Amino acid sequence: MLINAVLLFAALSALFEFAIVMKLKPRTRLRILGNDNKVRLIHLIVFVINISIHYGTVVGSMTAIVAALASFITIPLARWVSGYIQSYRSGNGKLEHYKPGLIHYNYDQIK
Image (tube, rainbow, N blue to C red; front, side, top):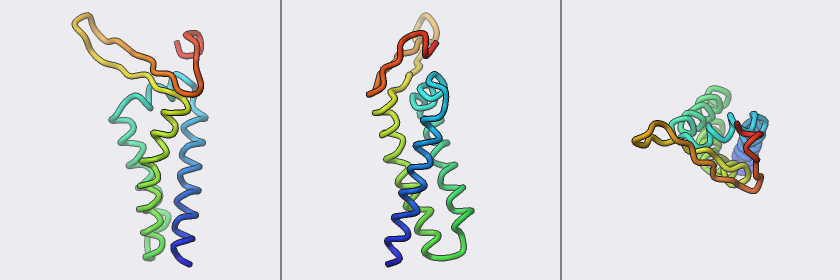
């Protein structure tokens, strides 16, 4: 029965994380989702928040760990739905490449 609580709270945490990411402005969201360091920071923030809330019991600690693992599914899901902007450097300076997801943004929405 405890595993049900762990999975439920982890799913709620993942749903909340997805909702927060999708509430960001399109350009901000796409740039965050395209930056590996910012994605790692999101995973870390999710883990730290969950461990600070649920610390003290075995079930709570397991919930925080499973919620952090669910974050590894949530971000690729957000990328798939929203797409992302990947920045890279070339000889001419910084370039950006927009990779659309299920939601297609036009240039005016992401400039």
